[in-house]
Picture 1 (cartoon, rainbow, N blue to C red):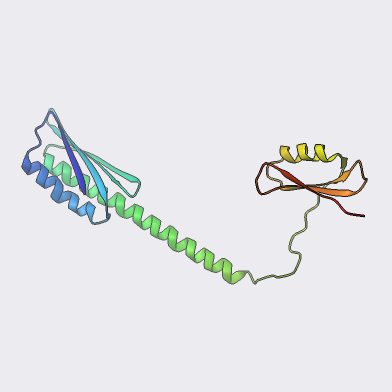
Picture 2 (cartoon, rainbow, N blue to C red):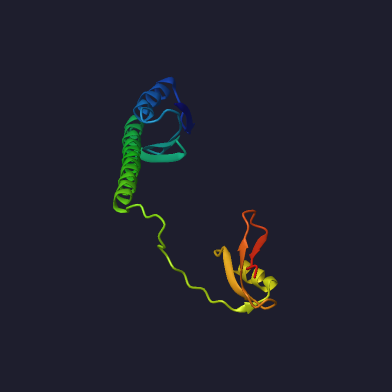
Length: 174
């Protein structure tokens, strides 16, 4: 664990540094690679310990005031450990629940093949293919538009191509 200790209106001694390192060892066991920033302050009779721990893209923070600096550090470590345990438990529960949901869905839905499972109804109106392109562009969630071609009087389908920029036109031969 990388530890950066800063003292504001207090000199960070080797004893304080080694105490902080020893206590952050309790937090370090939860992560492979973590960074900690410890800020120690003195304001009148109060000693403040402010600890930020960054690991796995998450930040944990604890700030505690006490008359004794070592007691403030101890309280911060307890708070951080609680936050980390809660976060890990929450993630594990989410992972377990999502796996169970996937298994339930797989068990519940029998595989359907070669059957019509959904029917959609579309309004077909007579327009030109150019107008159909404009109308399809206005509906970004739609991939195709069925219409009656004014020029031929037959049902055509305009669809978006995979490149996302161009369109295809499907029209009957006879």
